[in-house]
Length: 118
Image 1: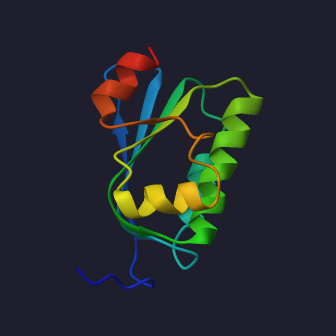
Image 2: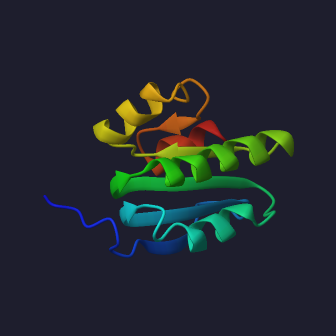
């Protein structure tokens, strides 16, 4: 499947199974051209658990990776739980290459993340 880096990323805010869980579901490529809205969302100091569902993300560039690192750092600093869910193999190898794969909290599914972070 071909990706177009300038293509928009679709962002949905989904309610979690509990009140303290907020799920941000992304679809499409997450790149320097389109990650600003997601970055704004991720910077909101929302209490509770943040789950970023990346299972429909086709491509992540280094700018978008920086945004994910930002989420990790700010959630850690404020002692708030978060998880990245459904990361594809291509993104996993980017994480590994940049040495952040061990930093990130990741789960295969949203259900798994909610159960673990409850």
